Image 1 (cartoon, one colour):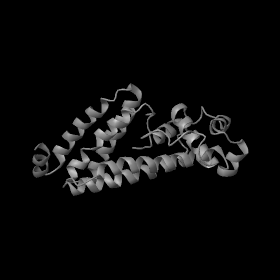
Image 2 (tube, helix red, strand yellow):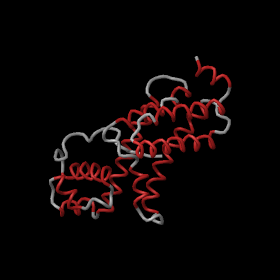
Image 3 (cartoon, helix red, strand yellow):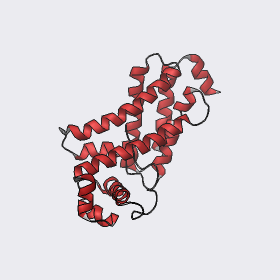
Image 4 (cartoon, one colour):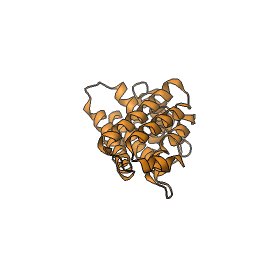
Length: 210
């Protein structure tokens, strides 16, 4: 389950800010929209308005630029998604039920290009542990918070249940990318409600139905 799928447009024009900021914004936009392997460093520096030597001085290689983009996008997505779940005071079940409305908002954004982590793993050699490690690190942070919410809601086995919830999220992200149908979020919400109804105590189910 990942990530920084574009939760919001880049902050400001591609050529605003420091050379490092410009390179990261340009690389993020181009990698997410066109794919990592389809975009060379020449395209990145042209969009950022910098010299190729600047890119190599700041990042050392395209591979390190890719890793930095993924790390940055992961942080931004987690801040947006987990922050949305935790906003305000609400019971744990209600916070869990925010998952798919949040994702649905993201799916409707014109800059929704899917999850950059899933996309990156798909593009790279399947034996490449470098990209896989970054993806798993991001996923573990999201899973850990969802697991805590499930435990708070009274789930009998939050350690197992959280992976079922994760599959719903990842499946919805991929399906929304392929179909370009934001209503995938509504389908996911119904599936999550059924899953929670079967896994939470009766008092939580009644509270959610009120």
